[in-house]
Amino acid sequence: MDFAVVVGHRRMVRHFTTEPVSWATVERLVRTAQHAPSAGYSQGVSFVAVTDAALRQRMAEIAGEAWYTGVGHHPFLSEAPVHLVVCTSEAAYRARYREPDKRKPGQPERVWPVPYWHTDAGCALMLVLLAAVNEGLAAAFVGVRDPARLRALLGIPGDVLPVGVVLIGHGAPDKATRSAQRGRGPLTDVLHRERW
Ligand SMILES: Cc1cc2nc3c(=O)[nH]c(=O)nc-3n(C[C@H](O)[C@H](O)[C@H](O)COP(=O)(O)O)c2cc1C
Image (cartoon, rainbow, N blue to C red; front, side):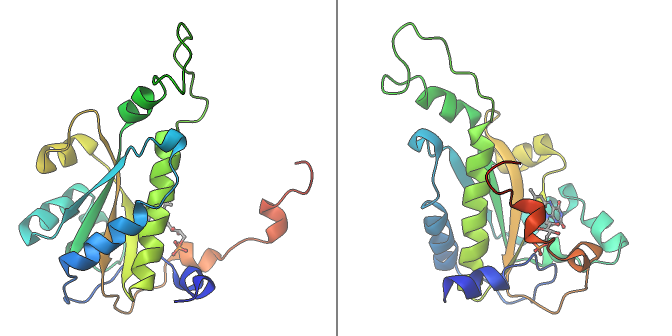
């Protein structure tokens, strides 16, 4: 698909059909995400792909599906045949930036004005969302309300943060959300020329 078409089609879709998504597709999505840039080439972003129905149901509960259906959404979390948990490891970045090409001997540990492990998770997430559109699929990202419960359910190590879950499947007609009605603001709101 043409890049502009993919970008133009991407939106959070909160309703899925029961059609499954193959494991080969999941692998292609994550391979695309691996093309994301990463600070210092740390590659500290990883994924847990869940297709098991019982596990997805538990994940939907943890992510607050009851709240979504309560405000009128379809039960899109448990509907989605693939739950792709986006994880990031602060430890991986700290370790990478202790390596000799990143830190001279005796130099203090780097101060992180911007936590690049989150920046990189965003870069990888965006590629997953675009790759899903390119495959003719639909996707939505939801935040993790209770990282500890999600970690326990999926065996995610304590030093790895589950940032959120990309729900992936075949899209079904969705309900218009208040957020969607907001539309994108004018370019002048986001583009400052030469100085703020
Ligand atoms: C970091 C981040 C967190 C988000 N968290 C949620 C969420 O928890 N639940 C949800 O339904 N949508 C969530 N969204 C989706 C946004 O609501 C959505 O991207 C925004 O309304 C713009 O709509 P669009 O992506 O369809 O263009 C999140 C998006 C981002 C980037």
